Length: 540
Image (tube, rainbow, N blue to C red; front, side, top):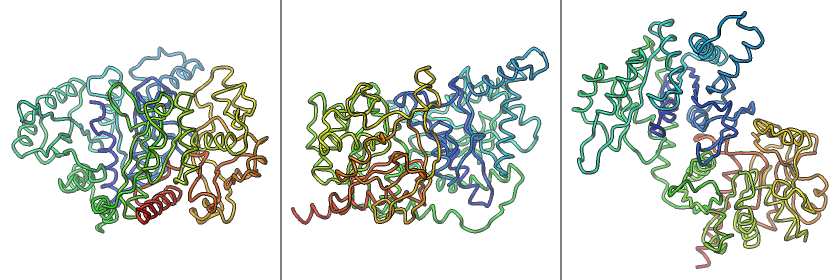
């Protein structure tokens, strides 16, 4: 089922195989017809993760990069939309020589070609491929069929792993294996027999149920891997190793470890920090992609959440995140003064006008009350709007994303993107992917990076309007990071003497944060938040 943990399983399998000395290439297959993940609503599908190339992908690609410390490429991601679009365009250009083009073999052959091409480009020893969706979904049958043929054409080189959930009905109190058995039967009907079963559930799988699954599903007992709910997803590779998964996988692939060293040790130390960090730092994340029915969907900001964790744990602190819906500051459900109880405030990225006035109130409160503030993408744009309104005195200042007729468009669209929007070409119509920037000496940004040249990933259409830069700077706002040609403002901040940490980035630093390499700007923000907490303790 959706959300059962396939992405974390792939990330963890990749991690433990890396620890054995292998070069691993993860590949994500999303069965939906969207050509990429960029046009999907975050409350429906979770975060859109952006690669260095600018490709907008599923959030699982972010998990792969974080766990395996990789920068993945376009070849490592595919959707049904990509495949069908390519095949149809090839057919229209007579690429199939006038043949009748069909789902089988042409769609499945293109899927296999892409899988093989990704392995070649990465020069990997092992590819770990996630087929998204659920067994039985009509939309992923083509991918399962492609994988079946891949296994036939590469005997002994392809293993199938099923991630399956074992429920424990409340009134019964017993873990049930029947849904897993039914999933296997359905896979069998497609001509696929799993070699391994990762048994997800609330509790560890006992020996009796391992044996039952093994017998009923035709897999060796030691190929049934217990994957219970845990406090941290970063425990999963270590739990897999307790089950000896890497050794069993390599044996099944007729491979010997390339390394005998304990390469998982740094990861183990990181996980230990998660468990031993007790001193809390309280961070408010102010967004609007939270409400989905009666549930809170934190996945909309997954990379931001993880980046906060990495920097906090790196400093021996335990992050306590509170989701604050910016709409509450507009409709009277909440007072912006509640932000005084937090050690730091983050406004992450987003699009559209809903909840924006609430965010502007929060930014103003954080600035005026010296609360460490970190704005990401839209968070930097709104920080600039707030400064123009309340410090520069331009009360009508706005972004043209919200008000195209504003008297003071301090944030405006890039000229080359305007034509695409007029033509309603929204997909990939933004500044996407990795871009260089240069930093000013003596700023918070340059001190954090320890460098004057950086590269960061972007996902936005709007920029600080060059017409207002001089006015904003004269009023005290510092643009500490700019594009190499000096035209685009990449980082805005207030000097330390004016505010302990009031900084925004036009890019998304969260996309490059890793467990063993926290992002320097997130670390600088958390340090400032910790300092605020200490100061508040002294004054109590």
